[in-house]
Length: 549
Image (tube, rainbow, N blue to C red):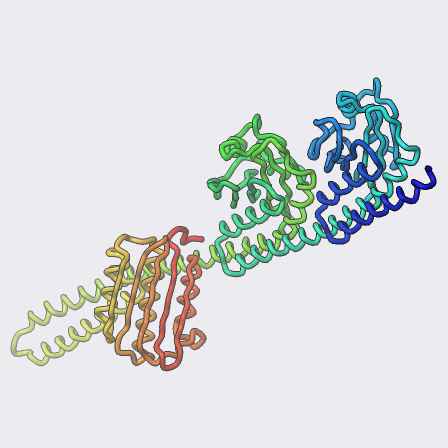
């Protein structure tokens, strides 16, 4: 009888193995493969139950990934058990070989107690070996019926397929992870290349890494020379990260641990941590965090941290994933840092030039202009005192006085071009109206910015219009110029359009390149459209929030 049953049993087992192998070959998700293996093992080998488990925490615990059949209710997928005593799981991990325990009576440990509590006294298992290390175990239990003598061997046939599924899945997941990281890096690099504000880049870095890990929140911080740390940008799943730009002491932070060690670190709880930074974390609902150092050009620049808002800790591989991502974003951060320093330098140069213009204008007004006015008045008084019979001398003095008046007008024109006083006194609207009145070409002026604007923005907008009108007068042969100025959405938009010859080219030294530099120095942008024969359209957008960058 036993000989007649053997071919049927082998055929049934091979069919089950083929079904599992088909799942693996199709690239089914690991969870689906694990569930199928547990069911096939129990049904084909006529067992009461089967479970697929993974070793975690360096072998300190075992996690149930799939289970089928009659078993203790507490041993379910997702449950985790400490290997704190003798058990089949512990023996398989120790020996790397199949194992069984025929009697759990009196055996200490959590798993043994749970098995006894569910009425199961016998347990057998076989190792799942992936890439040479014991990844997990397939196990089965029985309330009292003995196991077949060759059970461990028959279990091992299934573990080989499970190991293949795991290896294939891990390879796919690694490729997917790398692709996701590369895509995230490209998105960050694109922001940098577009000249995005550093705060926007750092917020994007935080959002990208939080989604990759995944985590509930993330933040990027920079170490300062005074021993503090600055929050450069952050992202939370619920929104509302409010600490960008804030500087904190390192006390009680994962950044502080990273600053001390230069390695990835983990903050298990902010509940009792002292200091303002942990208080800020608690305010956001953050429970724990994992961070990795960011090295830029060989120096410890800052830290990138991800956060959990639940009692569940972040996955054990979070440090490794963070470390890999920080290497990818370090270049983008370095480029952003350099761009921010360059923009700040350009802004300082423009501000210094504007201050010099104002000083020269004041010096001309209070010095040379006043002296010429006084000299003209003195000459006029002298002219009036000359007797009528000296008419020739009076005529000569009159000519000199007219020359002084002409020189004074020229000097006032020069001073006005250097820096118009009305811009500082009345603001952008009145200054542009003065430009329009003095223009040799009709100006259609529409200014929708009533309130005073940041000084750097007003000066930049004024010189954009002034330079554009100068170019139109010199080169365009236009009949009319439309000037529109509008403030909205924290941006000042300036547009100057004419119906002239077109063909304007910044490379030809028309002053447009200087306007572009001025706009970009305060975080703005300039665009030019000037087809030959189609007029010229100059548009500038200037931010009203942070003109110093």
